[in-house]
Length: 219
Ligand SMILES: CC(C)(COP(=O)(O)OP(=O)(O)OC[C@H]1O[C@@H](n2cnc3c(N)ncnc32)[C@H](O)[C@@H]1OP(=O)(O)O)[C@@H](O)C(=O)NCCC(=O)NCCS
Image (cartoon, rainbow, N blue to C red):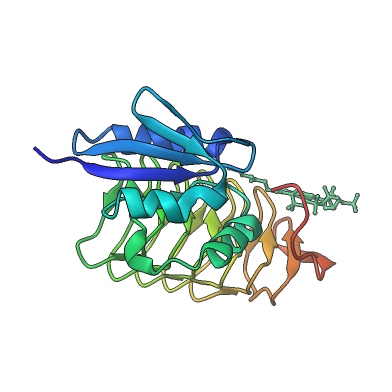
């Protein structure tokens, strides 16, 4: 059986979790791992390690390889994706076998779905998103690229999470609400009103605590 060759980008804690998810399928094989902390290229136990700048020559050597950007910070994940400029067909998804995903849900390239996550009917997840452990994405959600739904978060029906938004652990968003692009919802918050772009909202009910919070923060 020919295995799917996959290379990870990013070599921190988040990437170890993604590596294990990928290897939970016997069809996958990790053939590359790239991070700028590797100054030189080297090959150890069949895996090619190197800086991110070495990726184009790696693709020349392994044209069928698929990538996952295994970086937890939404902002950095987008920056790396833009720096590489690879088409979406170069990315794969990493979906843990215990996740329950509706056949009518759509999962974008580069997106990771962690153990015991549930994604219900007609929900649409964009590219390079993180659907973390035990999170619940109810029906008809729209979750845009580079967002992160943290462990145990609950998005009820028809919720819209815009690009790069981060929903903290155990937060809840009630039906039909929107969390704006690059906004953060604190751990344990309950979102009952739309949250604009680039804000940090915390508490129950969630109130805006910080405006223009793009990039930084305790994610
Ligand atoms: C909301 C959050 C992003 C804010 O981080 P930050 O921008 O570094 O902000 P600070 O820690 O300076 O907190 C700002 C204020 O919000 C309050 N606050 C922060 N997080 C809060 C939370 N989850 N619930 C209630 N209040 C919170 C702080 O007490 C502080 O209040 P003060 O100004 O009255 O003292 C962060 O605290 C958080 O909850 N992150 C979620 C982390 C998570 O779930 N990660 C999952 C990884 S898998």
